[in-house]
Image (tube, rainbow, N blue to C red):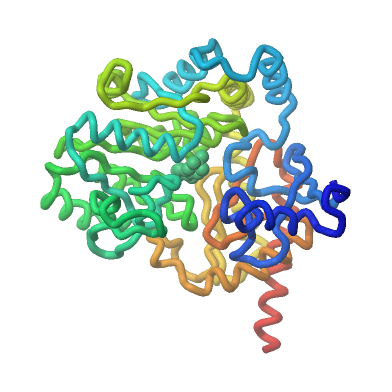
Length: 434
Ligand SMILES: *Cc1c(COP(=O)(O)O)cnc(C)c1O
């Protein structure tokens, strides 16, 4: 490869031809500094970088790889599918089978529409919600990420309901003005907003297990309150299960919390490592979508045969191998070993099944983003690099969660805990020396 541009590193070449050298911002390691990973291959729970390092991977492509990298059965299924053609532009059998399986596994789901990313799933679900209700407002929660949808790139506001202000340049104020932002963990604020504007609200969208700004595990009562408020006011509850779907339980957070949404959004796991998203709900709601209804939504590669085959194979393996019990076992081992090994009370392991996050402060795990102290990023940086030096790859940001997969075993968990405990001891002694 170096013969293409002698003298230039892969990183330099990447930075010349792609903004920041990446196709998605967090990959650039801006939050932790140092050289971003450039990967040559993944196998099980390991990544091999282009410069020949092998690391134990706890990011797992940010969630899709619940079976680990290059699971032999998934690779085989994709290879067989590829030989039969990579895209048809019409419905295929594996697509029907995946749709049936998703509807069978997820509470209350009768129909799904496939798209190619989680972003498309939330964007399209909200268009459907607006079309079906004839209302314009959507409500989101500060600290929840739903992909880079214009009207959802809004997180402002704490304590009180606020008018959305865009988080990103390029999102006009007018786009964000139909978005209301509420604080997580606050029934009173939600009730207040519904009292004022309940008859204009098309949908409330939430990550039932907010996992994109730390891991802000919510009280079940809070989620039930949203279910009740939306039902009482004729608004739709949209659960963004792009991370939690098929990971927390066979029926995602909906099953875990016993809450049936009107619409659910999926991504990550349902593509088995290929680009897939989906959204779904009751058949009467989904009937608002074209070609039956008047809400337009389409995609050239939607229901792509390779992608749905990878997702279908992944979901079948999860069911066959009793995955949810095993993921919970791995998670609880991580928690138990962590609590035994790390006595420093200024760091807590927050966990929801096979998702985990280090809260780098003392006290109860935060349930709102504002409660994550500003020191978190500062403290995370050296920790991240100690772990990477020890051959363990955690997410390159204090605000991203870790993912366990069926490719991890007890020994991998122990390796993570040992490295974490020693990195924390090291950090502590540096602080004490100062
Ligand atoms: C990753 C994610 C998305 C966006 O999915 P993409 O495939 O990256 O577009 C949406 N919602 C949640 C909760 C996510 O974690």
